[in-house]
Amino acid sequence: MLLRMAAAYRSQRTGTDELAQEMAVAVWQALPRFRGEGSLKGFVARVAQFTALDRLRVANARNEIGIDDLAIESVESTPEAYAETSQKRRDLMRAVRSLPTGQRECVLLVLEGFGNNEIADILGVAANTVDQRLSRARVWLRGQLEGSK
Image 1: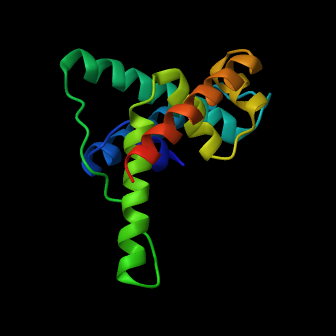
Image 2: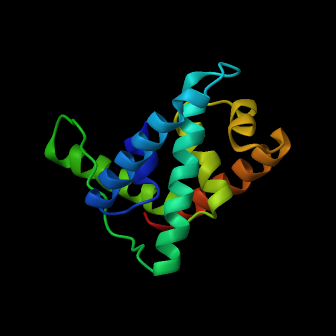
């Protein structure tokens, strides 16, 4: 989960790995604060999101974030199917990285299997805010992905 979340914030494989490691350390350090009021997965996701956003703010201030192709591995039956699936994943990750931060957070958590109410709790926003962000993100993503065909 941490690698997938990191991949949505960093476009280069080395940057993704470094961010995932930072997220893991942050989760480890935050575990004593877990009170069991929600799911452990939700707690981990929240810490990871905050860590990614903090690193994103720092990187943006330094102008370090670039958008390069993401190396995503996949097991497909033919080389053509592998290439097509890999391209679709790169296109999706590129589109997700282009979303505004609030929408990106919601999309990432949906992709991790969280429901809208859980996402609202993790992000500390109202459930209707999550619905609105996801609706806008779907429209944007659909337009971006249909335009890249």
